[in-house]
Length: 193
Image (cartoon, rainbow, N blue to C red; front, top):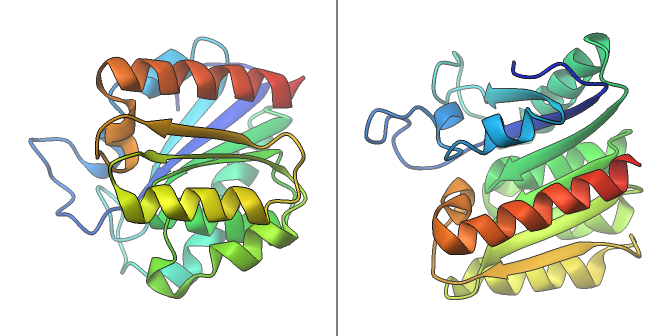
């Protein structure tokens, strides 16, 4: 956990890639964004079950409970308002948690309907603030982000199509990533107000 603020951010990543990529475990794949966010928020970076340093077996249908537990943990640490940034299937699980719980906001990076989850139905039920991001050249996730935005009930949903074809936390890398980081940080400040 990083930072010590009354607002919190959970970073949840999942990937079908091996969890050790160039020495970075899944929780370490955020390109330093966790440190940037920790200047203003309490940040919890989680390795979802079966990923990184987490034990267990990956089960997409149980990930929303893991995300809810991470949010609960931050709230017990004193962060009254918590936003979740979820990548790929973890983003879909965060939308599922938002549909059945009290999340202040959800940012999704490169979400699809993989893993047996139904993010389009979940986003239509979510009573929370939403932000959708994908790469413009990764057609599947870009199209799905547009569909999620259309299905969203939140009037002030954020949306960002980054240049290139990166997925998940890799959207936060490079010059295009800097613009996305700024958009996400500004959106979080707005929903935390």
